[in-house]
Image 1 (cartoon, rainbow, N blue to C red):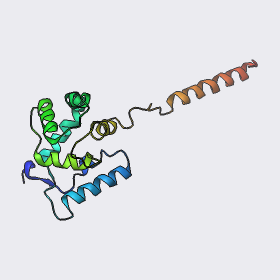
Image 2: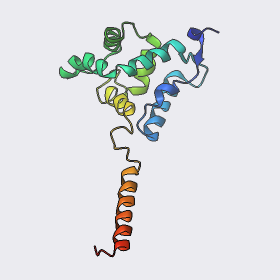
Image 3: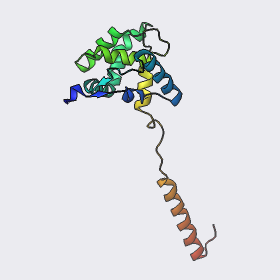
Image 4: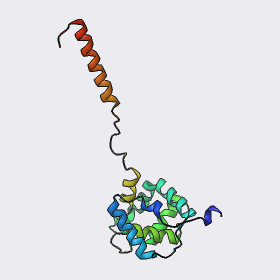
Length: 160
């Protein structure tokens, strides 16, 4: 089977962008409601590759969609396709747009707000990176130096 024909039964790769388990459950519920429990077309390998490329240029997508956001409007499927085409050079499949809207359109109004789409993806993209990743080496070294200094002072009979 060629990569373009490979099917992924659930859009789980996209669903991992949920910010919490509760949001993920809501997203799965919307997907099941829309596409049903019966075998569905899933998301093909080309769509997964496109979504990965989309995640790589999320800031550019945000900029492209920024004009709509600045005007106070939300994004329709056609506008999302236009922005993706402008940024990536290729169109989004209608099925992937449908899946993205089903997953990220929290209020089911047929439009994506910045909060529903870009903010969720950006927060997932940087999850864990906005906090310091202190592993304790600095604290360990400070403790070693303090302990060594105390041992030397004790040995030399110097009072602290």
